Image 1 (cartoon, rainbow, N blue to C red):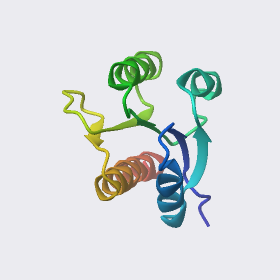
Image 2 (cartoon, rainbow, N blue to C red):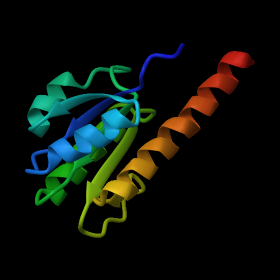
Image 3 (cartoon, one colour):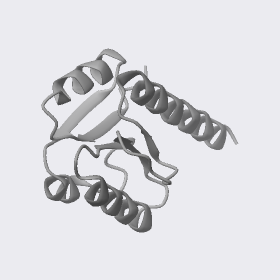
Length: 120
């Protein structure tokens, strides 16, 4: 039996518990962080299957944080939820259905790749 996929969720919004519950209900293990500097200290190579950043009103800071992660660990799966438009390939609408779909797609696609690599 596979262990639940680990997600670091960086989220300061007042409705963050809804995202935490929704992700947990989808079978993921959620590790919440309120601040990006707190999360930065917890980001270890291979520590999480996915890092989700809710940009909220800190769009620029969230993009900088995500860009840093991408630079330091290019294979880390990353998702940024936002109400504002972004040209980043890891950005998705902040709406719960869009976030859940993106998380499921990223982790399912990554799991397929991992399974194929280990089968070779």
